[in-house]
Picture 1 (tube, helix red, strand yellow):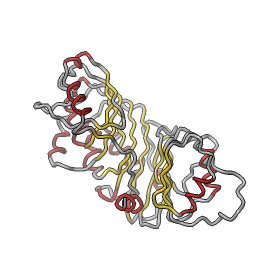
Picture 2 (picture 1 turned 90 degrees about the horizontal axis):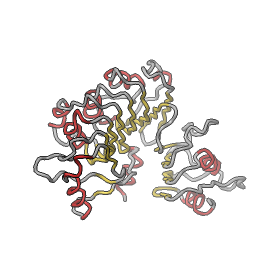
Picture 3 (picture 1 turned 90 degrees about the vertical axis):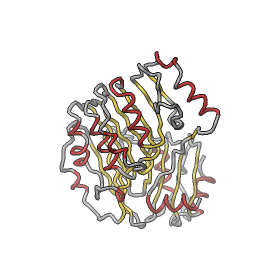
Picture 4 (picture 1 turned 45 degrees about the horizontal axis):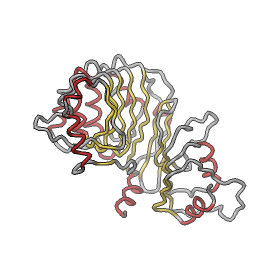
Length: 341
């Protein structure tokens, strides 16, 4: 629990979702049997549960789906970046739609980078990559992988990137997306993204410096930069309309409230601020702006300043199913447990 608290607050690292692992269980044996079955020879499309990580390969040929000769559309969650590389190599030319969530992205083995050059997916037109836990090696892993998939026409990226551990050295901007990704995909016609980049000892920058490039796909883009007392800065870069269902490390300074209900489909929210406390009005406005929240996590140890004032409205989180109050001032427990309906 202490490790969770320290990493959470000091490096803006997200620990949700917590994926289900099937190694050593009966479910693992069942899935392993099914994915090696000749039944899969006729399967064209496959969708696996997002919260369940595909077990490690146990068949001798090292293939994820050795019998899936027609599989062209797949939605899957993998444990490591290397698993994604190997699966793309395996499916190759038969793949036309690929949606993958990856739990961990870091250079576990040096040969993974050399394997990226073996990826050939000329028929892959639709790609979605979701990585909510901080990417450790973005420039070394993610960028070269995406550059290999040059025929993609519809791209969705949902990333959290620890810039401190990469070669980039600055927040991810529109210019970086254009230079490192879009320019390698000449057929790209739709690009949706939400990129949360985190940088230690970040120097304050003007948002205007991020407006030096016009994305090829010509969609509206919003950039929000925030700085915390823990010496970390964070940049949220996202296309419009907003396509994610979660927002992480949102402070009092994030422009969450707008007349267009931009974030109305968000179901998971992590609030964090070590600069200013969250007051009653803030929670009430969140409840109105984000009516579909199911998971709310609060991380703020600062005492509320307006708790003695008579509240004119109380937060109504009617759809909330999970409330996480790990490292907070007791004011927030009283606020959310005693006043919320």
